Image (cartoon, rainbow, N blue to C red; front, side, top):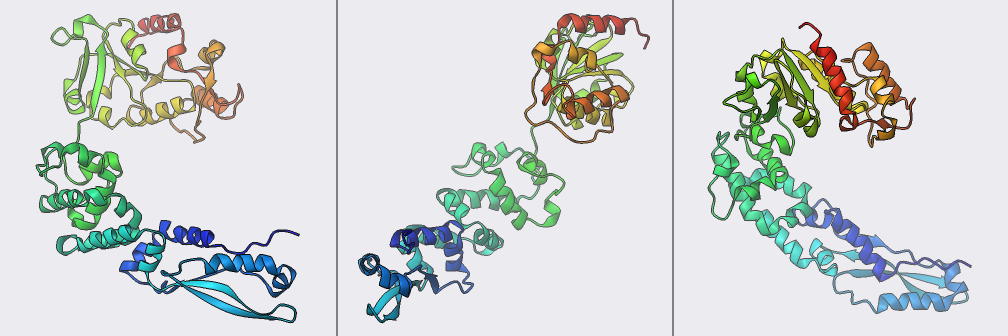
Length: 397
C-alpha cells in the first residue's frame, strides 16, 4: 500500500513561500484584494484511511498539535467512524493578515521594509506606486539603495532631457557607475514619472537609455585603415573616429573593403586608392551617415555562415552597390578542414543577396554540406585573398 500523502507543517511553509515569491503577501499588505484571511486547505486522511491505519493518522495529527500556531489558526473537522469513533483532524490553516504570513515565514523585517519603501513614494514619486505593487520583490532587492535611486529619478524629473552625459550628474554619494548599472530599473521609473514629451520612445532598452531620456550618448566610432600611403592623414593610416567625424571626411578613395575580423583588417594588403573598414556585425547606422560612401566600389568580407549572409543583406540596404568578397561556394569547399558549427543559425529569408549568394545561403540553411556549417573569414587562406585582389586590380572602376 502506498504511503499516504498528508500535508505536514513543512509543506505548509513551502506553499506559503510560493505566495511570497510571487509577491502576493507583500502587495496584499498595501493593496488588499481579498486574499486575506488566507485559508490554505490541508490534505488530510479520509475516514477509510483513519480506520485502516489509525496509528499513522495519530502521528500525523501530533505534528500539527506540536506546531506553535501563534501566526495562524487551525481549522478542525470531525470524523465519526463506527470503528474508531469520533476524531478531530486538521482541515485547513488560516492566516488573518499579511503580517501573520510574513511572521510565519520569518519575513517580518522584509515586510516592514517594504512598507517603508511604499511610504517614501509620496508627492512627486506617487506615480511609482503601481511599479512597487507589480515588482515588490525587485523593490526589496534595491531597498538599501532606494533613496539613491529616488534621488537620480528626481533629478531627471527636475531636469528633463538635460543634454549632458550621465557622468555630469552631480548628486552626493552617486556616481555614473551607479546609474549605468541600474539603467533598466531607472528606465522603468522614468517612463512613469516623466511627461510623454520628455521620452523618446523610439529608443529602447538599456542601450538606448541616454537617447530615450535626453542624455548625451557615447558616440559610435568607426575604425579604418588607408591602404594607399598617398592617402594618409597627417601621416596616419590606422584611425578611429566618431561616426559624425567619419561622415565629414569624404576621403578620395575609389574602393572600400569591409571586413568583420580585426586581424584581417590589420593584415589587409596595400591597395591603390582604397581603404578597409573594420565592421561590427549587425547595425550600420553609423556608416550610413557617410553619404560619400554611396558612390564607392564597396566589397564586404564576412563569415560564410547564415549570419554572415544576413549581415551582408542588411549592409546592402544602406549600400546596394556592395559586392561580397570571398563569400562563395568555392571558398567554402576549399577550406573543409576549417569548418566549425554555427551555434544559432539564422532561418530568415533574405532579400538583399545575389542569386549565387542566395543559393549558398539556402545550402547552409538547409544543411546540404553538413549540420550548421560555418567558415570564419580568418580561416580563409591569405593567398586566396591576394589572388582575388589581383583580379580586382585589373578591373576598371
